[in-house]
Image (cartoon, rainbow, N blue to C red; front, top):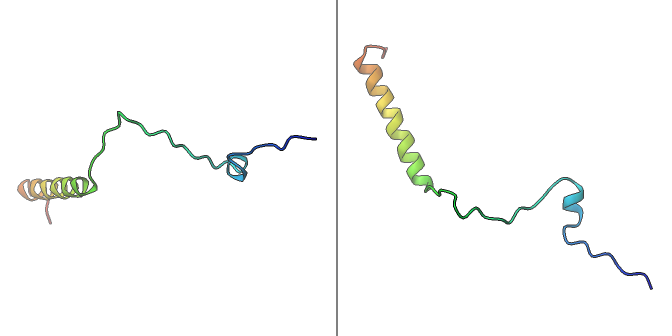
Length: 57
């Protein structure tokens, strides 16, 4: 009898779609709230510097 091929990834790998389950343990994780707060602070600093140097309309 012929053996049946075992396909674990199925159609996804043949279509060019791959799943990667390896998680980078050394990656830096940043809270999304911290990113939003930092971007607001940077925007405020840029606006204040523009106003200070007379670039503000």
